[in-house]
Image (cartoon, rainbow, N blue to C red; front, side):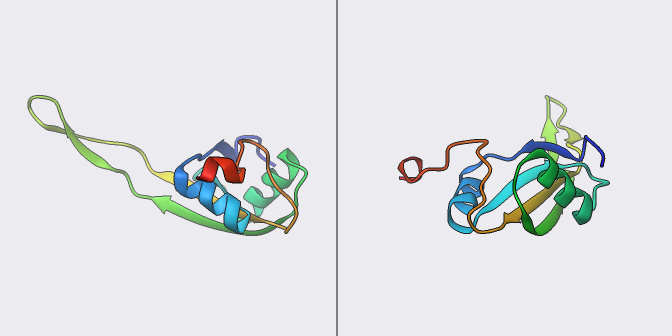
Amino acid sequence: MNAYTIVKPIITEKSLSLANKKNTYTFQVSRSANKHQISEAIEELFPVKVVRVRTVTNQPEVKKTGKRRLLTSAGKVKKALVTLKPGDEINLFDISESTAE
Protein backbone atom coordinates (compact mmCIF):
# COMPACT_ATOMS: atom_id res chain seq x y z
CA MET A 1 0.00 0.00 0.00
CA ASN A 2 1.31 3.40 -0.95
CA ALA A 3 1.45 5.76 2.03
CA TYR A 4 0.68 8.73 -0.21
CA THR A 5 -2.65 7.42 -1.52
CA ILE A 6 -4.71 9.66 0.78
CA VAL A 7 -3.63 13.29 0.42
CA LYS A 8 -6.05 15.04 2.79
CA PRO A 9 -9.68 15.06 3.93
CA ILE A 10 -11.99 17.53 2.21
CA ILE A 11 -13.95 19.50 4.79
CA THR A 12 -16.76 21.51 3.24
CA GLU A 13 -20.37 22.10 4.15
CA LYS A 14 -21.49 19.48 1.63
CA SER A 15 -18.97 16.86 2.79
CA LEU A 16 -19.98 17.40 6.43
CA SER A 17 -23.61 16.92 5.44
CA LEU A 18 -22.76 13.66 3.62
CA ALA A 19 -20.79 12.41 6.61
CA ASN A 20 -23.66 13.23 8.95
CA LYS A 21 -26.52 11.80 6.87
CA LYS A 22 -25.05 8.98 4.77
CA ASN A 23 -21.82 8.04 6.62
CA THR A 24 -19.83 9.05 3.50
CA TYR A 25 -16.49 10.82 3.91
CA THR A 26 -14.65 12.80 1.23
CA PHE A 27 -10.88 12.68 0.70
CA GLN A 28 -8.47 14.10 -1.84
CA VAL A 29 -6.46 11.16 -3.17
CA SER A 30 -3.53 10.54 -5.48
CA ARG A 31 -4.50 10.71 -9.15
CA SER A 32 -2.94 7.30 -9.79
CA ALA A 33 -4.82 5.52 -6.96
CA ASN A 34 -7.63 3.10 -7.82
CA LYS A 35 -10.65 2.21 -5.70
CA HIS A 36 -9.07 -0.89 -4.15
CA GLN A 37 -5.97 1.05 -3.06
CA ILE A 38 -8.13 3.82 -1.59
CA SER A 39 -10.22 1.31 0.35
CA GLU A 40 -7.12 -0.43 1.74
CA ALA A 41 -5.54 2.91 2.72
CA ILE A 42 -8.65 4.09 4.60
CA GLU A 43 -8.98 0.76 6.43
CA GLU A 44 -5.30 0.89 7.36
CA LEU A 45 -5.35 4.51 8.57
CA PHE A 46 -8.61 4.30 10.51
CA PRO A 47 -10.26 1.34 12.35
CA VAL A 48 -13.26 1.20 9.98
CA LYS A 49 -14.76 -1.09 7.32
CA VAL A 50 -15.23 0.48 3.86
CA VAL A 51 -18.41 -0.53 2.02
CA ARG A 52 -18.14 1.57 -1.14
CA VAL A 53 -15.69 3.94 -2.86
CA ARG A 54 -16.69 6.39 -5.58
CA THR A 55 -14.11 8.56 -7.33
CA VAL A 56 -14.36 11.88 -9.20
CA THR A 57 -11.58 13.57 -11.18
CA ASN A 58 -12.06 17.33 -11.54
CA GLN A 59 -10.61 18.96 -14.62
CA PRO A 60 -8.11 21.82 -14.22
CA GLU A 61 -9.74 25.15 -13.48
CA VAL A 62 -8.60 27.96 -15.79
CA LYS A 63 -8.50 31.52 -14.42
CA LYS A 64 -7.44 34.86 -15.84
CA THR A 65 -5.01 36.74 -13.60
CA GLY A 66 -2.97 39.92 -13.67
CA LYS A 67 -3.14 43.11 -15.66
CA ARG A 68 -2.60 41.30 -18.96
CA ARG A 69 -5.25 38.68 -18.04
CA LEU A 70 -2.92 35.74 -18.49
CA LEU A 71 -4.45 32.29 -18.26
CA THR A 72 -3.36 30.12 -15.35
CA SER A 73 -4.66 26.71 -14.42
CA ALA A 74 -4.74 24.61 -11.28
CA GLY A 75 -3.90 20.93 -11.62
CA LYS A 76 -6.33 18.04 -11.78
CA VAL A 77 -7.72 16.89 -8.45
CA LYS A 78 -9.07 13.40 -7.71
CA LYS A 79 -11.59 13.00 -4.91
CA ALA A 80 -12.87 9.82 -3.29
CA LEU A 81 -16.24 9.49 -1.59
CA VAL A 82 -15.86 6.66 0.92
CA THR A 83 -18.97 5.05 2.44
CA LEU A 84 -18.42 3.20 5.70
CA LYS A 85 -20.24 0.30 7.35
CA PRO A 86 -23.15 1.48 9.55
CA GLY A 87 -21.89 2.26 13.03
CA ASP A 88 -18.35 3.13 11.90
CA GLU A 89 -17.16 6.72 11.80
CA ILE A 90 -13.98 8.71 11.25
CA ASN A 91 -13.39 11.34 13.93
CA LEU A 92 -11.22 13.76 11.97
CA PHE A 93 -13.62 16.60 12.65
CA ASP A 94 -16.73 17.12 14.73
CA ILE A 95 -19.89 16.35 12.74
CA SER A 96 -22.37 16.52 15.60
CA GLU A 97 -25.89 17.82 15.11
CA SER A 98 -25.06 21.07 16.97
CA THR A 99 -22.68 22.19 14.19
CA ALA A 100 -25.18 21.36 11.43
CA GLU A 101 -27.68 24.02 12.58
